[in-house]
Amino acid sequence: MQVDARASAGLSPEAFIERLATDQQVAAALKNFQSGVADILALTIDIQQIPAPTFAEAERAAFVQDRLAALGLVDVAQDELGNVYGRFPGQNPDQKQPVILSAHTDTVFPADTDLTLRQEGHLLYGPGIGDNSAGVAGLITLAQTLVDFNLQPQADIWLVANVGEEGLGDLRGMKAVCERFGPKARYIVIEGGLFGQISHQAIGVRRFRIGVETSGGHSWGSFGKPSAIHELSHIVTAIDHLPVPQQPKTTYNVGIIEGGRSINTIASAATMLLDLRSEDPDALTQLVDQVTALVKERNVPDKNGRSFVTTTMELIGNRPAGQITRQAPLVSWAEAALRQAGWQKPVFITGSTDANIPLSLGAEAVCIGLTESGNAHRLDEYLNPDRLPQGLSQLLLLTLAAAI
Image 1 (cartoon, rainbow, N blue to C red):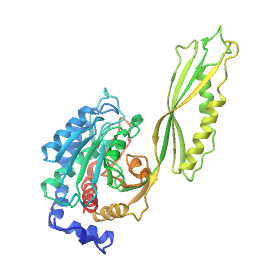
Image 2: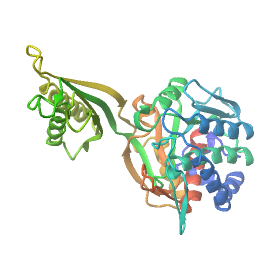
Image 3: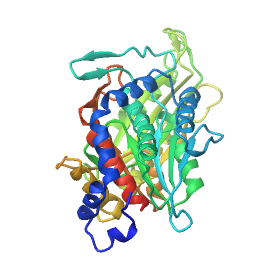
Image 4: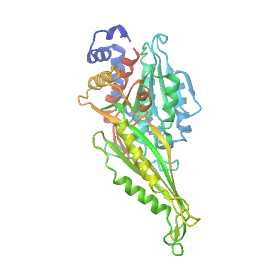
């Protein structure tokens, strides 16, 4: 590859990306994406067939580690969480901050989920096929492309398959990645779906386990005593009546409710998991304060051992907000690379992804997608592979621009 940092001096992002794309080796790599869709899709299927629920990603991590090692990347290893790292060496790493490419390995589906795939036309259906099997396949494919076409940037490129993005993982994998590389590195987060979308603004998310305990009793003999389930229902109803702004968009959702012993028992304990989100940190803080007040209102101290209601609210997830501007180099290159790949309708979104962590630290970070998918987090999730060549082209051009 003949393009170096001097080639970008004085050029617009569009002109710089175009110069990259016309380099002989880069052009050959981009062309190879067109002819390699079947292989990329086969790799995606291999990954999708490996169960990887959050906190149990070990088997999928081992698969990725073996593939990165077989490609000849250096420093291939796992950390104590199960994040997999591999380095594609740059020509001048001492003078350049590293570029981190990441794709999360975990899915929302339990280990015993039926992962059988079905094809309807050009769409492929199966749990986790897009989120994030295609993203992990894209990470491996990018590594193979760098090796096969001898694309030598200035900075080190680290390829990371990280754990803990979904559910209650609380972005723990990416937190460890950012602790290792720091805020001066550039971060590119890969999602299997979301093609054509660029996220450089991170939604703030707070997650809570809200619990209620009461004395309980028999549904007939103790009728009138407080029920943990009923008390929890009052809290849900009160949350549902909270006014939240449309701009900045702010949301709440009770995703899981558990509790009770039998149909004829006044429940002595119940819990729920609550997800609160906002584009604006202040609006999120206000919503958290409102919910906290509602939970406290239902707390009734014991009166001579007759009845009581004890409420608790435990923070179980904190995805911090953050953003960089549309004019930041990484964002500008992401847009220019998407246009160079033939897609002229980029959409800039606010999201909750692994990019939350580097963005919250003030680092340059974007999240991009590789192709079109739908029904994420459902058993009938599907993947449309048609955009894979364009998505991988955007990823390659963005990576090279960031590493020069």
